[in-house]
Length: 93
Image (cartoon, rainbow, N blue to C red; front, top):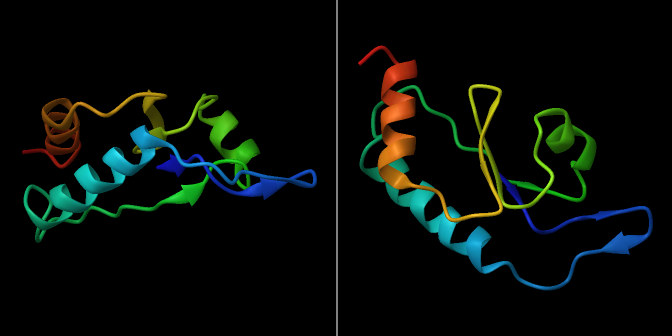
């Protein structure tokens, strides 16, 4: 997930992103429940610092959530059920 944070080009993002905070909470909760014991990695990166990486995946608006190298969502609170189904499908469950 690319969060609304970071710095690049002499610009630093200082304000908070409510959707980013909610998504972080959802992902952390999923790590302890749905993803527990499964080969799932969760990375959080500052969007502006990793701007080109995010854009390469189609992520223009933080929070950007990438699943298996593909854009899952951006700019919104993630749909937990939809994410769980997508990850389960990728794990062959």
